[in-house]
Each structure stands twice: as C-alpha cells, then as structure tokens.
Image 1 (cartoon, rainbow, N blue to C red):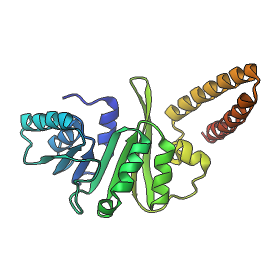
Image 2 (tube, rainbow, N blue to C red; image 1 turned 60 degrees about the horizontal axis):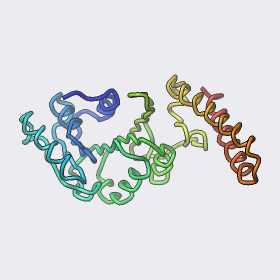
Image 3 (cartoon, helix red, strand yellow; image 1 turned 90 degrees about the vertical axis):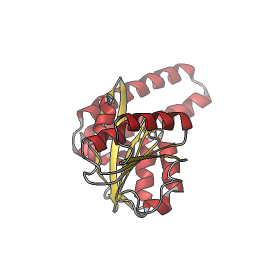
Image 4 (tube, helix red, strand yellow; image 1 turned 135 degrees about the horizontal axis):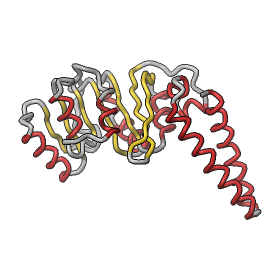
Amino acid sequence: MQLSKRLMQVTSFVSEGNRLADIGTDHGYIPIYLVKNGVVPYAYAMDINKGPLLRAKEHIEKEGLCDKIETRLSNGLDKLFSNEADSVLIAGMGGALIVDILMRGEEVLASVDELILSPHSEWEDVRRYLASNGYDIIREEMLVDMGKYYVIIKAKKGSLKDYDEVSYKYGKLLIEAKSEVLKEYLLKEKDKYLTILDNLKANGSDKSNVRMKEIGEELKVVDEALARL
C-alpha cells in the first residue's frame, strides 16, 4: 500500500487519538495507514460506491484490521451517527460536492470535533461554507502532486476572523505563511488571465468586453494576493 504525496499530507492533518470517518474512502488506504501507525484507534471507511468499498474491505481484511476499521456503504455522511467519530475526512472530490455533503450532514457534524477537507476544486466555496457555518480554519496547506495543485484544510468550531475576498479565494493562512506553492500557483493564474485578456481584446465583441471586465476583476484579486505574500 503506497499513499500518494497528497494523501500522506492529508493523514498528517488528523489529530492523534481521534476516531475517524473517511468519507469517500475509495480503497480505504487512509484509514488503514492511520490505524496501522497508531494515529487513530478506530475508523469508519465510507463510500457511496459498492465496488471501491468492497476493495477497501479486502484491503482491511488483508491487513488484519477488521476489528478497528468498519466499512459502510453511505451517501456522504448519511450512515454516520452522532458521537461515532471525532474527525471527519473528505478528500478526492470537488468543493461543491464537499459542501453538499457537509450541508446534508450538519446534524451528525454537531458531535464531530474536526473536519479535514481536501477539495480538488472550488476551494473558495469550501472556505465560505465553513465561515457561514461556525467553523474556524486552523490549518491549511497547499501542495503539488502529479502536476496538480491541492489544498488541505483543517477546521474546528469557531469563527473565521479578518477574511476578505482575497482570503476566501486563496486562503488566509496560506498567504500569512508566505506559501511558495501558492505564489507559484498565483503567477500561473496571472499568466493564464493575461493570455485570456489578449485573446478577448483581439475579438472585440460586446460579449468579449463583458468577459474582459470579469477577467480584470479576477486579476485584481490575484495581484492583491501576490502583494500580500
């Protein structure tokens, strides 16, 4: 069993001694790793798809961890019950889907101590959901794995402080930490937007002019984030 660079970093966000619910567990690698290494005493490996869950169960049995990891066929948090887990981990899916899972699972999340979230996209949506629902982001990291940029967020009950548009879009803690990965990402975003602007200018249509204004606003946010790094 070999965890990717991203998943290895995700495991470091789970607090030692917590019972874990891994939502969208796929092959069950994260709960297996965390239980085998004594980080968590018990875990729920949950997935909406029967195939991956069956493979996860096979891996758990192979490692002799059936007494410490339970598999559950579940749409998001539907089959997790109050006071079963201290940490909920959701990784490997888009931010909009993560937000939907969190919204539908708010009742059970009331008894959960921490959230570890690693959205593939729509990072801003996840941060805004957390802010609107009484969570404080206490740790955030950004990394590149196989050429793709990922963020990992750890949140607990509390309130976000001093978050503005730039903070929501690109991560207040990443900016405060002067993340070199974020800087690299922002410079690529700036180049992308400038290229789009050049193409739109060449078009010259009314629709292009509207889009140029939108891209200009995006560039302002990127430049402000870069100025804070």
